[in-house]
Length: 231
Ligand SMILES: *Cc1c(COP(=O)(O)O)cnc(C)c1O
Image 1 (cartoon, rainbow, N blue to C red):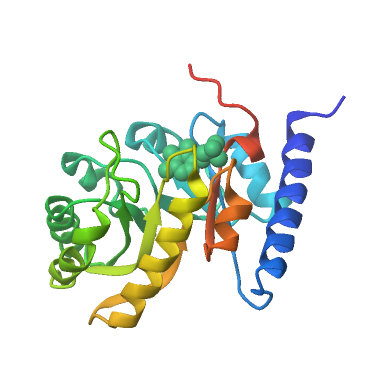
Image 2: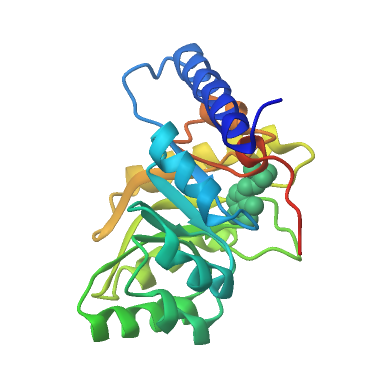
């Protein structure tokens, strides 16, 4: 019987090889694709094993409380916040996250800018796009993305590094394709202070497809750590 640690290593090897194959198939052999480990509900010992044994370098955090209770146990890694972020929680995470991928409103941008200025940093962010216009999800609508990026570009303590999306599980290919078009479109506009270096999309169920449509950060939870057990 494999231990939980061995299972994570086996899962990682499979994911890495799938990502590499998808990358080569889509003619992107020379591009780096970051495999982020999404940590929600996973114990720090297991997360640390993914860092030390698999070489995971980026952790994805969804929940402020859970992150704060676990972060001091983590081995050194780059932390990206990927969950819906309430404005009143920004102050708790601002000094320890490398990227906030879930920037979904101008109000949140203003709050991130304020706290980033307070701690003396320029906060890297990705603008989250609600690509399918789903009621229950956060993110800028594709139609209003450009004008919102212009507004965000005015905040001196925020640096937009790209786009992030969580497409609907069903029919995700169409939306991944639209995200790629949007990403290229925004890149071509060359907006001051707006970089299009990262396209974060693809989860356990669709990461190979996401790579096909240009993703360079895939966010993997259950395919790496196993099904989530909520306590
Ligand atoms: C949970 C989560 C993931 C990972 O989901 P899996 O399907 O378990 O890989 C990726 N991105 C976000 C924003 C998430 O909340």
